Length: 151
Image 1 (cartoon, helix red, strand yellow):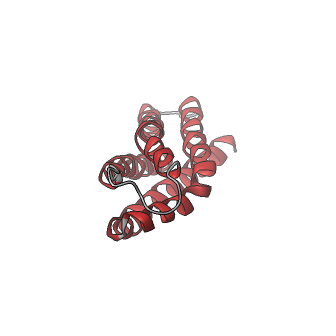
Image 2 (cartoon, one colour):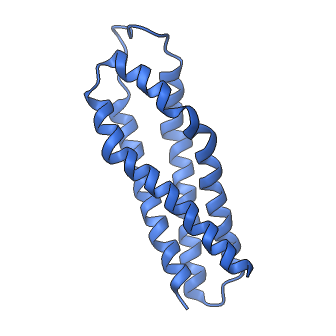
């Protein structure tokens, strides 16, 4: 019963993270790249308000569930899939905290209105880090699902 509950939690968690990251990558980021700097800054401030409070818990919670599944998995292959999933989710967390979050903080710190003439537009760097963590999240979902269905 515990294994099944942890499996559901790990799958839902990695699925939510992968889905959110994928949706942002294919829809939100292209829109942000087309905005003027002023509109981008205003929009960026609005978009991140709730993600910042929720996503770290979903990412870390999924990784913890996978590590607990390692302890309750009967085969070497299952353990390997869950270890890989946990490592990939920790990769999402590390990239987020060291790549995207610092950029988010810099953008949120800008005053409302016109951006300075010497403003270093972070959108290219943000997109780079986001693509990396999206790849980690999608791979985490795939290996977690494989671990769940592996006998």
